[in-house]
Length: 271
Image (cartoon, rainbow, N blue to C red):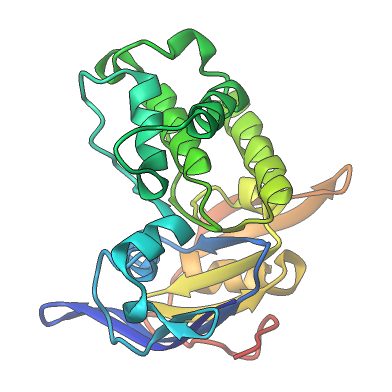
């Protein structure tokens, strides 16, 4: 269980997150959605302790985040940033081996090697295993990062726009693979994502953010409505289903209120 209580964060005098309260159930995929600047990336960085927030605002398994050592946190939690610096001369296999760092001493054991090769195979990176990272495309680098966090074998994955650099086919394949890995390893996955249609297919619940505040939290059908899309994005939209797959079609931009109006009774919440 991840519990967020009255989380606030500011860059200097600029507030980014405003009094966020949230319970995230284990063994689920949770999508963070909202427009640019709504606080999605900052929220993930606070959860991963890259950014320091109020020490009591975030708890994992009933224990405040600041009480975990760096090594404990690395074994429990893995984070993939939105724009990773991966123009490196190291090979793909060495980049994925980095994911085993929290679990090893000076040398990788055979079990670590097996985990790395399993991740390479899962993400279809076999032919790139000994290719230098700087020779890969943006989408290929993204797949390497995802393979690395899977090899890390953390219980919680925090992913910031993990499919943004992928084409349509690879988006679907990668999202399907993440769902499969999540089920196999019983993971909690929190993903910041702009693609509402991809979020609708692979999320157990959705957290809507607007101007740094939680607007709603719940299952897709409970939270994603024409009203919430208009309020959050300033877009008139149509929601429908094809073969039991929900989708959103953006129709036109509409005037948008500057008032975040969080939690207006929408969606289910345990906070």
